[in-house]
Image 1 (cartoon, helix red, strand yellow):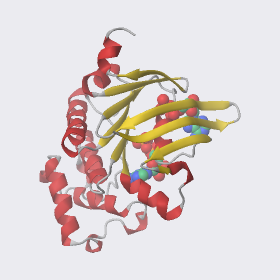
Image 2 (tube, protein in one colour):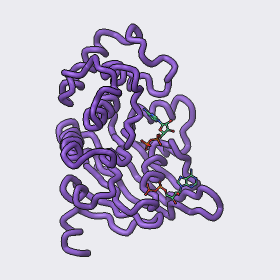
Image 3 (tube, protein in one colour):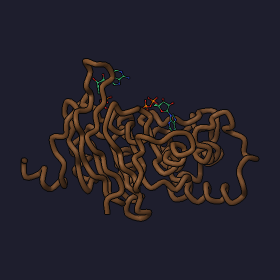
Length: 239
Ligand code: ADP
Ligand code: ADP
């Protein structure tokens, strides 16, 4: 089933910089969808309009039965718990532990409260521990995040997104700062999350080979337009 529809989406940063030009596509429940294309194609802008970190210029994004481009206040905050995000540069709080960073996912945007463990219930701490274990970083739980490798940091980022029980996780170039081995580990975890938890994973990538290997579907973006939207096998046929 379709979980989200992007309709006639446009983004102009200024009158002369049209970065997304009439983007239309559906997103299906539980799929791993990659968005590929050269630098500057508009991948990051597209991903960030999906959770309204960037305001679209026009168009609709239908999630459930709601047009999320219209949401404000409480509705916007609720939508952002349903749509988690991970970043190329992890966006962790370096001086805090793995445990604290993962729990921080429960606070959403209330950044001023970060790192105060007494804010969380025993149940929430138990849940954080389970997710940390699922991602294989339980040996590092009390380490500060700045003591971790890049691959470990990205697993913390995934855990922080998962603790909110999102329906969709947006991943903006999640492996662009990692070596090939760590990149594979992260892609395997993202695939597992979509398979085992049924979470929709949308990943911006610039490596076509990685996208082909892990995606259920690939969207090719070039100069703000969709130039490909199909299964990786179809791309193999040279279309
Ligand atoms: P990609 O993720 O595919 O590299 P981006 O979405 O980051 O592409 O950028 C697409 C285009 O939009 C680029 O030309 C970039 O310079 C421009 N751009 C991105 N963010 C802004 C901004 N805040 N203001 C103006 N132009 C921007
Ligand atoms: P990257 O360089 O890794 O792509 P940026 O440093 O550009 O990421 O950060 C992107 C934006 O994400 C920033 O404006 C920041 O305020 C915001 N941000 C940081 N952490 C989170 C988070 N956990 N959830 C949502 N937005 C976040």
